[in-house]
Amino acid sequence: MKKGSIHGVNKLTAARCRGWWHKLALLLFSLLALVFSLPSCVGYTPPAPNTPAVTLTNRVPLIPAKTVLPVATSTLPPARTPESALGLGAADILGSEVQFWYPASVDEKGIFPILTKEFNQSNPWGVTVEAIPQESYAVMLEELKQLPPGNLPDALLSYNYQARQLDSSEQMIVELTPYVQDAEWGFSADEVEDFYPMFWNQDVYPQGSASTRRIGVPFYRLVQVIFYNQTWAEELGFADLPTTPERFRTQACAAARSYQAGAASQGGKKGGWAIDTNSSALLGWIYAFGGKVARAASDGYTWNSPEVEEAFTFLRDLYDSSCAWVGESPYPNQEFATRQALFITSSSAGIPYQETVFLDADTPDRWKAISFPSTDGEPVSAAFGPSFSVIRSTPEKQLAAWLYLKWLLEPENQARWTEYYGTFPSRFSVQTHLADYKENHPQWAEVLDLIPYSHSEPGDPSWEAVRLSLSDAGEQLFSPRFSSSRIPDLLEMLEATAAELGEQYK
Image (cartoon, rainbow, N blue to C red; front, side):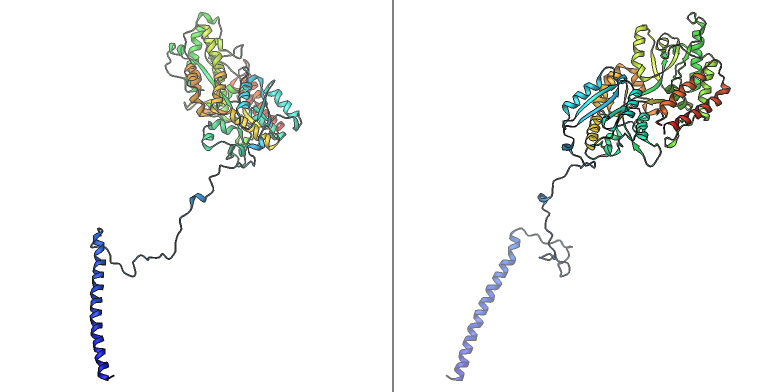
């Protein structure tokens, strides 16, 4: 083959290739045109004029550097209910048997056995409680001090100074703070706030100390107040309540003059305030003059103070002015209903009885329950009453006893107790169950409004004896042979006696 021929073939082949590449280029160009025309067919919208151009530095990578997988929530454990810090569950107290002691005098109508039976039939743990009445607070206290640990009851109703005796000398009372705060068996924060603070705090000691113990939870309270014949006062020309000591004196003396000038007096000195030397009544007067007899951290008493002296001087002056009188009966409810006294002091427990006396006297007079007249005109009253305590035994029995007491403190159960005895509940919300009771007992409703202004009695273990010494001092204060000049000596003697008694109860 000639070299030229070869050259000729190459030329032909090159020409053919140039034609094939030309056709291939046209085909590729057509395909590219078709591809770039597709977005406009599906509604493509061009970017806004201000959209930044995609560059190598700001474009979103097609494959992330790190892939974050979604959390599979179905594999998480279910939410758990709060666990008890006491280390006990429902199975631990199943079928527990509990004894509850209380003084028979506080439950003459037998309400505790009725409530206890309902608890036994309804509680989900099968706990059985036996409510056993005792002769009195004092007898019950002495018996508890003498019983061996294995024979003690599991729960108790007593005054806090009595529970403190058992706790300080016998180490018998369970510290209830862990039970109150327990996530499963205790009170919620809202339930704690439902208790009146002055009642709730009374069972914690030492007051004012950083290290305290809760030896009880309050059941009910009584309030020391003054009964006031409003109709008679209005006839005497007084439209306003006697909110200060001077106003009280003015009205008491006016009533005394009115009574003593009448034919019914027969030379007597009645008409003003019927003197009451009960320790709760005297405490009410002391609080009204700003006195604080219980020392900080529950360490004894302060009787010999300017405030207590001022209160005693005021009361003695009422007696010396014939504006206050000493009656033969410690309960002058009849004299009050028949206008022999414009004022008498009484526990709120006396309201139902006074209502009955007014009905029996068939008098149209209206009467009120008012606070003690204070030096600043603000309401003041004295409050006292029993609390529930748990006695040391086994952890299981202690928890079972706590749950029974907690059930008794439910608003519905406190309301039932109130309707039978006219006491005052320890929780605010109980009022929502007592609308009818409030309407039918207006004096009770008046005292209910005074609860936030009440002061508790001392909680020192010696108060059981010291309160009797206070009553004795009151009797001396109103003795005919006594004079106001001897009041400082009387208070000094009262303070010395209280200090001696306090040592005996340590």
